[in-house]
Image (cartoon, rainbow, N blue to C red; front, side, top):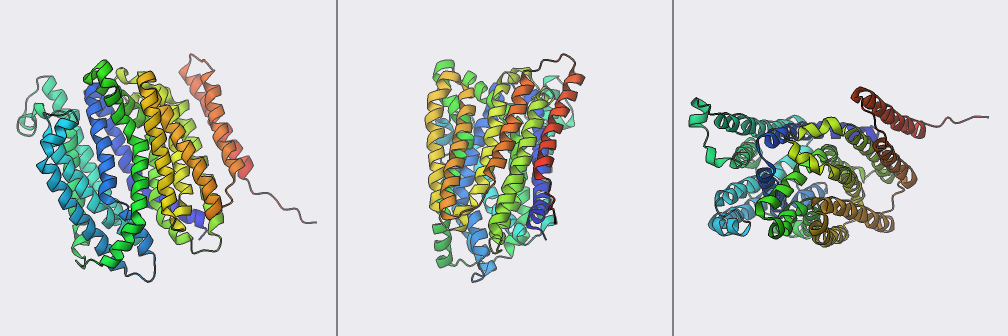
Length: 494
């Protein structure tokens, strides 16, 4: 099978539950923003920013290490699996125990002294998700797509369903004075935002239960020599992943911490909520990137055995950029419609961050494509170094820009960070694992998409129908350019 078609098929198979799941979670954005004001929505944004760091810490690069060592013929797949899972179980038990014991002190530190239960809930959420990541990785490796999809979708449906029940129904019903069996026995008004976290906890427990038949079949034996090699391979991945999480989520934490002394904790949390809500709009590209990554990582490792692997990587990069550029245009040209996913108008003041974040996510996706050079060559320390440079940029620029221009500084910082990481990774990759990427073609698509968007901002048309029709022509122009440039050239035979 053509490797590009194979990757597209795998992206569809393994990305489907991810795409459906993220879209279902996307439904939660209008529900949450319709019920909660920015200062409450900011609590959700901040807590999940902390979670993103903890998930990476608790998996410490073992998922990528699992794929790496599982693909080597000299290793027993069962031993790799059992060693990885048992290591994660041990560290997770320690983490949950420590978090539970020091829950109140942690809650005091993050400025939620009256909600120490958040710390305990999230310790279980993060711990269970960390353990579940390896059984899910094994399902991907074994091409057991139906099982993989079922586990993810069922847990996501539960999470979304409970959010709809508690946030979408019970809270508005309580506010309107409606009382019935459900609001009386299954709802406590003082929990409020906490129901978002409880729904997540139930979903994580269900996912773990659904994966337990795979976990039970473990050999329950740790190969410490193998574990040592996996940890040696994985720690740079951990550092790189942490650095990437700094780039993706530290801004959501820093907005509150850097502005609270000037404008107050509640107002600063509201600013984080506005930024987080608008950040959700850029999640459309993130959905595609996540689906792509699910299929791409095992694909890249398996494709490395083929003679024309470098050519395949170049083609994948080009078509990845084409799809992302089209998504960017689709979102920005129809922002008047898409913004209504964020229900309350109080959030719309932050829509200016969206184009920066969309382009930043495109660069992040390009970086994921480029990162194959250090994963395949075993030079994962370079990947960690690049990500640390990005994290340094994120920290420094956020501290400089947030006090001056608020959350807009975070969006600008994110774009600069990922663009810098792409440039560094490309030049290092060409030295250690050269791939002939079609740079001119890639830049053509990115600059064309950006130019079309900028031109569209200069056009003022009162009729929405006429405006949307013009935007269709803009999209058609981009597609036409792709067809012209990518159409196979006819070979003349004399």
